[in-house]
Image (cartoon, rainbow, N blue to C red):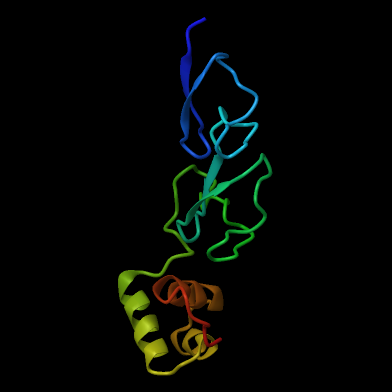
Length: 133
């Protein structure tokens, strides 16, 4: 019986198999070695992540949005300007204000921008620090 070369879609391990459909990957042990993992992209912050299993995530792991998969489309089918993103000028101003010691709440109030947009902008620019709310 000829050996077949198979590759795990989970860990990319390649091995020779006597059976074209082995029960699991010898490297990672996945029983779903031949099923590509589900990947999702947040429509709010554009973060892409891979989820094991078939459950749809409740929150985006980057911005913690519960509505990460909602499309900002109008009823006529045209896509509106993304209400969840700041234009480049406002984004730069938010970052500048934050670096000068202003909190997210203070920036939101002063600039008249929703708090979640201010927080998301700062989090995307300074991802590994505690954010001064």
